[in-house]
Figure 1 (cartoon, rainbow, N blue to C red):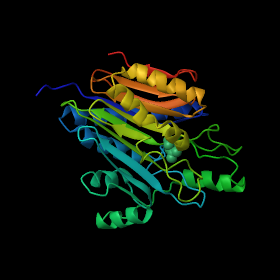
Figure 2: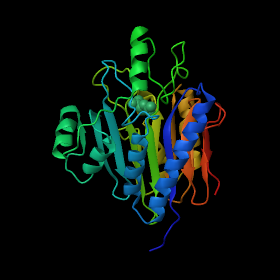
Figure 3: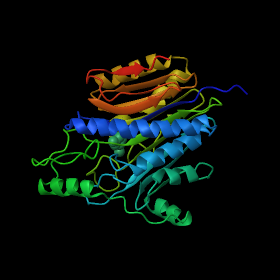
Length: 321
Ligand code: ASP
């Protein structure tokens, strides 16, 4: 068996520019620390799938991001979370849609990997949490609750919640308009296997029953050749079928850089607002965005880098190894 150098890329959402410079440093600190921990696990020989689940759990535990603890509230003031997991080596997708009161939605998606019914929603998700004997967990943070209360005071004029949980200023706004913070993890392990996971609290302030892209193959897809996790407006991601579209292009022979360039040029022409992170089985680390910022960090095996300070016009990039 040939051992490859593992590769890891993670994201903590995409959206409008951050209002507070201090938030950038805090985000960099969190993302770099988490990518290092995932890398250590991969370096110790863990499978891509286990590394992805572990990385998603760490990001779900970080209240700054809109997944697990710190998820945004929906229009009725409740948190409902969704997560998708795809193992590229088996080409199996599993997911959980609109689950409440759990700490790690990714654990439910992981549990469903070998199951005959692999994507469960609402009632089925609650039933599964009981079956797995998951302790009830309240994912609401004070900051997210305050954000929702302020939105309520303004009669829910904004269409989304924050890209990251930033302190809300006296004018009542945290960061600017497009405001999300879903998390995603993509890993290539030592044996050359790819896996991807994506977890979200949704767009925030959405109507009941809305289904996020994160637990669909538009937002999260992998096979033996490439793996992609998306973030941004779920409806835009679904309309482009973004993750699958990029993976299929690479599978059919396009270089990952070209696949991202083409997909993001199309997305720009269609006026979409989102970002994506990607890995190829060759170890190429890549990303793309139409939104102002993409909060991604990666580990090449030699160095850690991130996309936090790219200019808003930059569409795609590949890490030169
Ligand atoms: N894609 C997520 C959704 O629409 C939101 C996000 O990425 O922040 O549910």
